[in-house]
Image (cartoon, rainbow, N blue to C red; front, side, top):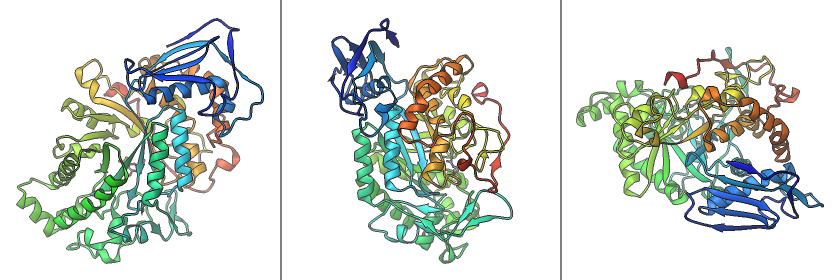
Length: 504
Ligand code: TNX
């Protein structure tokens, strides 16, 4: 809620234009909710009271918005004091989990660019940074006891450009990884900005890079995994982990080191898009199914997920996975990141599990943002800025029921099959991530009642200038700049689905 005290009353702030400096008095008052804040600007100065340190920090971000676009530069450039209107703002987030997932596996993003994304998230009051660290096309976290994961798994000989037939290739080798100290640095930098970094180690599917590094992780009784390379295609790889004790021990070893680096309560273990064909043909997998008294391969996957659920719980952490982990029975303490419609999320919430809503039909930022012919390598469904602004994380089926509280938050996901550089990631993320941030933080009306015109006016009047000050290569409202197009590289676009919220 914002109460503007009538203009022209304003405070002149000097040196307040840097992100953290300024003549601002702050204090914590734990009678306010976590992350809540009160910001007062009056003749008496600028005051921020936060429910905790995070609340104070979010209050500072709001003050920064009031200071004008130059407050979003890395250092102050104002010589004159900046006029800030008198305000009294009481504010608190709707959701505790306001997330952004970046896929650094399909295309590696250097550490400095990841740090910059922490700044971008913090400026938008997003507080969870989910790093998708492993996939078929690359393994990005150094694991000391298994050095080949990055020696072999972090590199691929070439990269598929777009999605057409016959295939187009970028013949440059691609790769990269973060050392554990790089990740510690990212985590510490994020913590200073009240952002939690959640790691994802994807299993048992999306594991071809790991199998290429350690062939014994694959289903060696049905294929010759020694010949496997880090994948250069996009899509679903048939090469999945073998459901053996040795593989469980190996991944416990991986996760041991992950826990040592990442203080996050939640650890993401993937669980998505696991093709079960090799398990169907593997005598070892079938013997496991029989030995455990399971019905089928779906239950075998659940058994693996359950194993890591218990393993993480015993170490004081909690498992989160993609909504496939609901199939074949959900592990006890697991939380679900719901990416396929709202379906798995509704089932999980009704069964008493925490849910983060991130449906690809609504908030996948790798999906194309305009139906126009100039969009670079268009992929997925069209999610315009307005579509994202009208995204509602709590579906009608849960709204108003006690299960709604199980939706602990929402997340926008950016996969990088075709977003091969920082500029391309910026283009996909912005301006839509700004709309998403407002959805995640504010209590907006139901989708159809939202005032998108007002949001657009605020974007045009202020926020694009802030993004410019932060050096974000966003998609201009009029369409891509000529250098943002990728003529000749084919995409793969779907037809627009009906708004899915009404259906759920
Ligand atoms: C689905 S979302 C995937 C990713 C792809 C993405 C492309 C999810 C859990 N799996 O592997 O990159 O679609 O939009």
